Picture 1 (tube, rainbow, N blue to C red):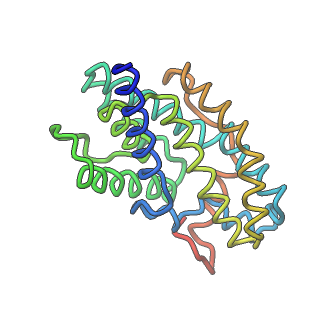
Picture 2 (tube, rainbow, N blue to C red; picture 1 turned 90 degrees about the horizontal axis):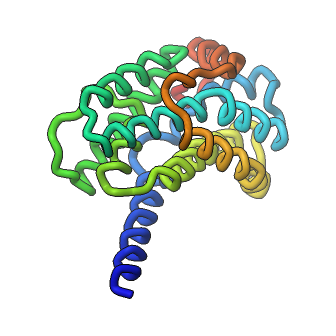
Length: 230
């Protein structure tokens, strides 16, 4: 009974930290990034709730969402295995995989902000990490060091990824808040499937084919009127 109480306490602590770290209130600046969605809305490619759900679903399955999940899982395994050289390689790969200047800015600025906020509030008491941490690498590193299991970390990260884009879509299209929640509900099985794939994947299968989303992030760099940084 005592062991089961300790396990419940650890699970509750892990849940609390994931909810805090991946909350919209966490100071990573997620609200200022649209992942190229701002261009897609201006171009007329995303104009309603169904289109928003499809666009985000494709990114989760085939683009940055899947890529981030694999990087997070690889980081988690490197930390749990004490593989400092592997962590450095993953950090370098994560930064190099960005398909545009804006996407690199997005992942590195959020990763840096996440690492600083997390170490300040939940210090892990470890040495120096690689200088430039992409966002999924920073989250995977924190989850592993705080004893958070990989599967819930992946689901929480992908939910936050999707929810941030839904929030951007609600403002840009625009949509009502209920439509936004319907979109998040429709994306639940997609998040679960991508998390399950990342659990079993290694870095050899990383990559993406959401080419229109990548092009949108490039075109956003010169978009005349913008609300978002990316």
